[in-house]
Image (cartoon, rainbow, N blue to C red; front, side, top):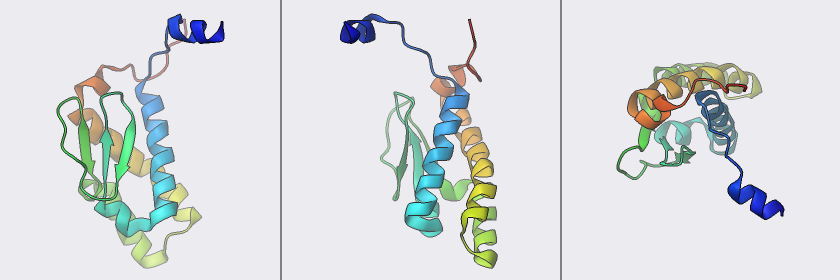
Amino acid sequence: MQLLSRLFAPRRRRNQQEIAGRAAEVVEHVLYDIGIDRFLNGSMMLDARLRLRFFAVTAPAGAPPFAIVPLRELPEALVLRAYVDDVGLDATAVSRFVPLLVEGLMRELLARSPALRALPPRRTLH
């Protein structure tokens, strides 16, 4: 019965705030796992199902609605690089800069993806 209800129940539509939350999780995870250098050499891609993916190298090109953002292009990433060069990458730096990185990433993804722009900014309650 649960399988049938999952198949036929209406799915909750995603929103831009959820995508931004997932972006924060991915950015934080990547920074802790591989470090700032590989992070800046990578790209974030929003796929056709609106899932974020990190590529440590240049992301494969795809047809719309793919949106690919090389992380070196984000001014916020360059500010993080300068900060890390002076202080080092620690939990304080990550917690301070992840929201800024996500803001810049979402700005670029929204500019490049009509599918993402079509989503509501926040979840609406009925």
